[in-house]
Figure (tube, rainbow, N blue to C red):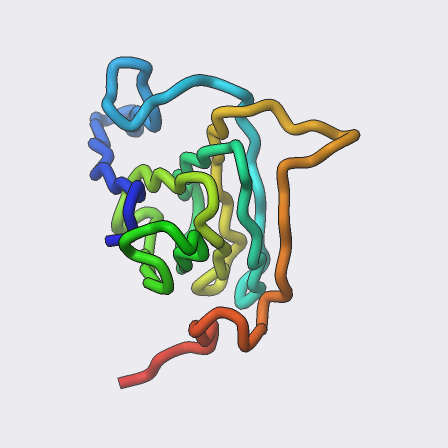
Length: 151
């Protein structure tokens, strides 16, 4: 696992009315601080990648569909520099994925429906000076292939 990345299995509490799932609580060890909450969407098969933050920690929760999330440790001083992690999150694997600053990340919508990821970053988005640094989704700078891996 990339240094600083944390995964927490989320508990789904069903009853005859539906279900409830806590996504992030201030008394969990994964919580640092609150900046804002937003939802990002990807259509089936679409890749939204790569980017990282210098200040912000992200907390991803897939609230609809399935996402293939990839992380790449681009921090030269990290003990896991150059490591890649891949996670499948969504209905069948409800998790909280904590992504620290400096870790490149992105996701792909998997399946036949839209994928929705709620993010609870530690910082407010700055429209004037965004803490967001990007690379193209398909780049040789990161050893990752977004294509489907059939057995």
